[in-house]
Amino acid sequence: MPDRLFPDDSVPGAFHVKFGLTSQSWVDPDRPELLVFEYVNHVAIVLEHTVLDAPDDQRIRIVHLGGAGMTIPRWVAWRRPGTAQIVCEPDDELTTEVRRKIPLPQRSGVKVRAVDGRAGVAAMPADYAEAVVIDAFDGAQVPAEMASGEFFDDVQRVGRGESLVVFNVTDRAPFHWAQKVVAGLRQRWRHVIVGAEVPVHKGKRFGNLLLVASDTRLDVGRIRRDSNRLPFGYRWLEGAELDGWCGGAEPFTDADTRHSPDPSGSKLWFA
Image (cartoon, rainbow, N blue to C red; front, top):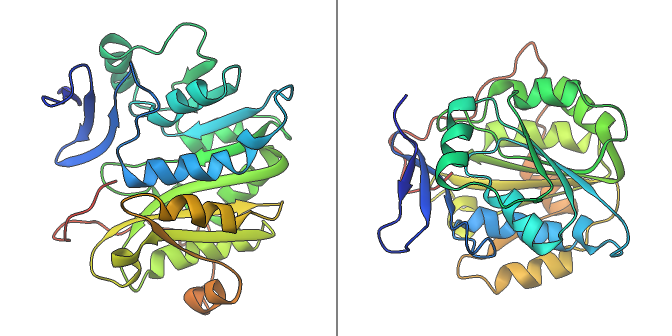
């Protein structure tokens, strides 16, 4: 198996994690607070205004489906030490390379399981975690089994408290695939928002969409405020605007689910 971690020549000690031509994450192990990818910054914003805003004496658990360089778990461990984190990463060779080149700090609270996200969630007990962050790709595509209603049933089962789900996906306008995924989330969680850069929303390029679902009302105002401070802010859809965006989309089931669209031939994007 060829290496997937490549040094960033402009930042000593930092690494890109690549799958073929797709750059899937960027990590500076000495500065976990430095987040480069736009979607990772937005995952951090959502976590800041949800589960990480809990009282300091409340120990929380976050499950990550998809690990790669573990940029987000490293950031959480820096932002809120003592957080219990489980990472489900089926690519054991990648995890071995990460541990060799950019190991996690001691007592990080991060445990890595060599299992795919769906099997990992199925093995977890009910009421297990305050948040599930889904950032799993098969090459450059979100695996079909991570988009079905039956999978979301299991994710809902393991949630506790506000039962937060943060799902990074990729798609292009008119977003038929992402609309069906959002429809599945909206059937199970009371509050759902969808964020993406304006050029992605307008169909000018393929890119990331962040799907956020919760049993507790999301503070969209604060999320938008912090998002607008970034160089590549997101436009966030909720309520009636999200109704219109979803149209009449029906959720995927295990019988008809499929991988997210292949970005081949699309304009510049990052997963």
